Image 1 (tube, protein in one colour):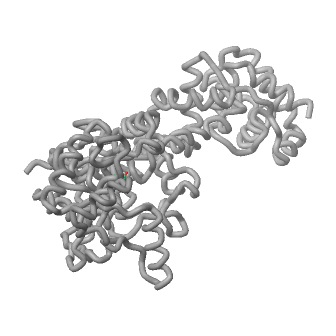
Image 2 (cartoon, rainbow, N blue to C red):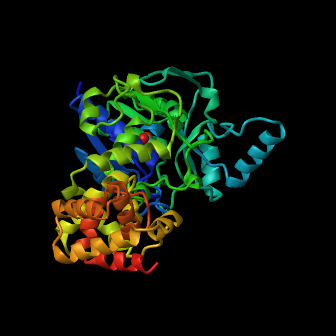
Image 3 (cartoon, rainbow, N blue to C red):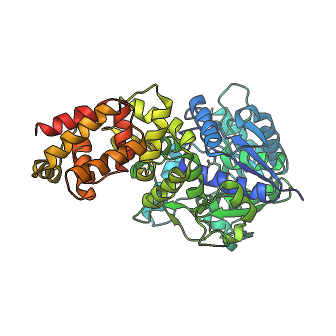
Length: 479
Ligand code: GLU
């Protein structure tokens, strides 16, 4: 049997971290087994579905490095298939028309509430006679289609993550609606609903493994009944743990960033994002290995190593993983990722070599790409604010002479190199009979206004190329 899995997002919002993580697990599983990964857009909810969300989902998956082998398929283009399945269920007496009005249903629920019962449809139209149905239709009532659910039934499956799962037919809320009331004149029934469409699609696309979030467990029980009704082979199911917030509740929009676009905007790179998401609920056979590519994960992926317990979303872990990727990325590549962030901060340079040098300098201090702005502001020529320590040092006896000495040396070497910069420091150390450390610290204080920071010589060289070192030292002399 060749593995066929899918991701079936509804385009009612931007690509969400939960959907992206489910996509990653499906993709890893497909790649591990040499199978196919299919993208299906569940756009039957016409009011909430939008083309821009469909595009956002596709571009987000592509950005993460998740490619699909088939699709995208759109449910809105497959309505005939769903209608045929509904006809079949009706013809077999497994589904029926229910003519209850919204008011009647509400009354039913109010009654259940009053007697402390869980809300459910009481199957009152399950056995209407033809005459009763005709009378309702003649009174202008429009039917929904419901699938019969045997209350006494126990639905059992071997979940590939959770083991044996049992669900009672009586816990499914009564006979379930599989199609809405007709919208147009002459229609037999209206919009097919999620559970029906999913089953028809998964069957039609020969899906072998349905891997999706644990919030779909009750749907799985209902879908198994639909597979049975349609006389079809039931796929394997694997329910992955939910992504939780720090309080241990399902991560939601209220927790701030949840869409892949937001993470991208904040300066997480796709490799780090994908790496982190693979770790949300899955552990490598070698659990100490936390930095890996999707291809590496695919070589080891198995559903047995997916946890049952929810996975807490931990932004500091994501930060750490992101920093690992940024620190090991070649400067020639990283620079292109930083340029938009510099531009956004208002910093621009056409000198690519200078930008690459700057990238090398700041890379070790980056956690997110958006740190690039603050980390390089002084090198782009923003004015220095001196820390108190730097100010004190620059006023210390002898330091002004050092700064003066450096200025003169710079004037003698217009295009400073690393060797020359080091020579200047040695020279000042000798002529002024001071410790080298003091010269270096003073120079840093003069150039950057701080006593700590990235590599001094490299910072100096970057400033030198823009003629900023002389200006800064001059300024330091006037403090
Ligand atoms: N449209 C559903 C969702 O986004 C698909 C669930 C499934 O995979 O069946 O949650």
